[in-house]
Image 1 (cartoon, rainbow, N blue to C red):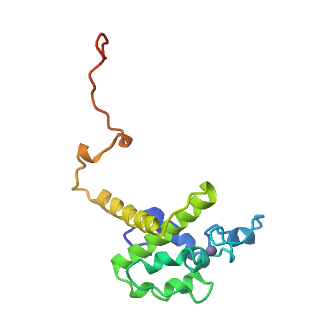
Image 2: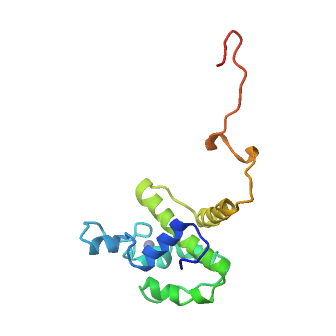
Image 3: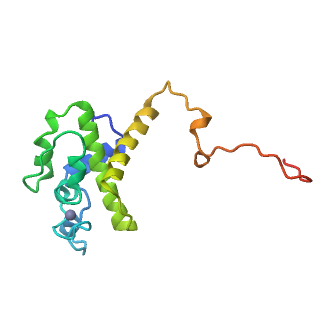
Length: 168
Ligand SMILES: [Zn+2]
């Protein structure tokens, strides 16, 4: 898992998911946090790690559109589900699997904390885009050109002052 070429935050996320440390509603309840255990997305089943990342009927379409086959979980063990196919995936597929798990969890949190919904296409886009941006950032020979930067990146340009004003 640690050798997979994904952003460190995604590797850390996967470690937490596989270790049962992800703060889903079921995990919070086990730790005596007074929350409802139900899934905040479907409101039908308890939100275990497996349900949250794969079993939820609102999440499963993401896996169906990933582009390669992953079996639906047959138990509530996230580790068992991952072990069932992870060794058959090639490097690229394993990266995309990790990224999608992370993007699904991110979408879940945006719904819980900001009531912001995300479509299947948006989740897949965030997963792929985040990975591509990270891979490009690792390329030490790539020199970013100013045209790639936007105002949000801190780029400013000189503007002529109005008539009668000095610019210092
Ligand atoms: Zn659900």
